Length: 86
Image (cartoon, rainbow, N blue to C red; front, side):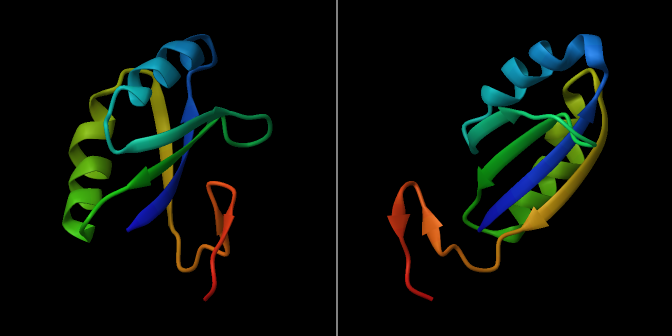
C-alpha cells in the first residue's frame, strides 16, 4: 500500500520536520514544496493497519507538524522511473 501524505508544518520547523520524518523506514521520499502544503511524503506499508498506526500515532510524535492529509495511491502508472501497466 502506497500513500502520499501532505504535511503543513510550522515554517521555522520545516527542515527539522523533514529530517525527522525521513528517519522513518516506511518513508520513501520527502519533498519540501511550495503552496498550501509544506512537505510531501511518499510512504509504503504492507497493510492498511500499519499506515493507520503511522498516521495516528507515530507521525504526530514529530514536533512542528500542524496538519496532515493522507492520499492513498490507487494505481501507479509510473513509479521510480519505470512505467507500470494497469
